[in-house]
Image 1 (cartoon, rainbow, N blue to C red):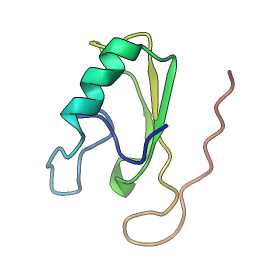
Image 2: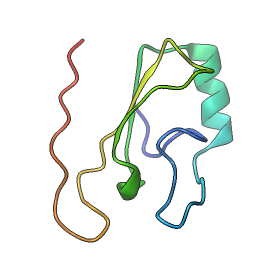
Image 3: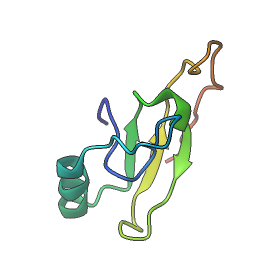
Length: 78
């Protein structure tokens, strides 16, 4: 679990910029967790898979929507 996303996974801002952390992505490539949970990028809320990290399920669980309101809670069954 981290505050922000890894680079290219749930990190796209509303105007299209990718703002995830490249160092975090590399660390996840080494650690190979089954699940990685993060938030911070409100407009990229949702579940993700990545072809370069196929063993990991990614979840951006930012609760607030960018323009107000709340996203549905995320339930992850392990």
